[in-house]
Image 1 (cartoon, rainbow, N blue to C red):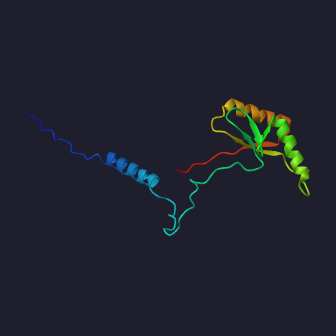
Image 2 (image 1 turned 90 degrees about the vertical axis):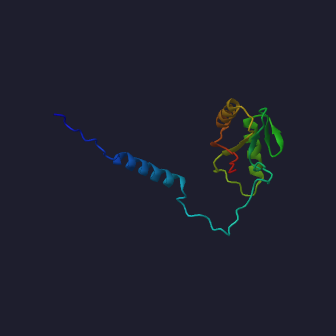
Image 3 (image 1 turned 90 degrees about the horizontal axis):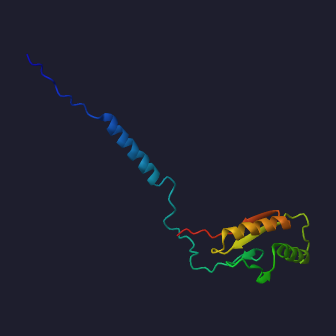
Amino acid sequence: MKRGRRASTREPTIALINIVFLMLVFFMVAGTLAQPLDSSLSLVRTADLEGRAPPDTLVVHADGRLSYRGRDVASAQAYLDLRAADATQMPDPDPDAPTAVRLVPDRDLPAAKLVALGRDLAAAGAGSVMIVTERALD
C-alpha cells in the first residue's frame, strides 16, 4: 500500500515579517524625522561671499609661510610676541586672558607642517590651538 504524502504549503511568514521590518527601518532612517522648515523661509546664501581669515589669526600658507594681520611672521614665538604687543596697545588689556591661538591653514598645507606648527605654538606658550576651517554644505 502506498502512503500518500501531503505537500506542505506553509507560508514563510517569518521571512515576510523580516522584510516588512527592514522596510520600516529603512523608511524611518531615510524619511524626514525633524520638522520641515517653513516654506516661506529663504536661507542666506554664502557660496558667493569672499572668505577672509579673522584679523587675530595666524595664517599658514601652503608653502609653510606664516602671516599675521597681513604681515609675514618668522616663527610661532614671533607671532605670540606680536599678538602680545598688539594686546598691550588696546585700552584696558586683560593680562589673565588665556592665550588661545586661532590658526587658519591653507588647504594644501601638509599635515606634518601643521602638527609641527601646533607643537611650536604650544612650546612658545600658547594655551590652546584652534584650527579654523571651512564648512561646506553644498
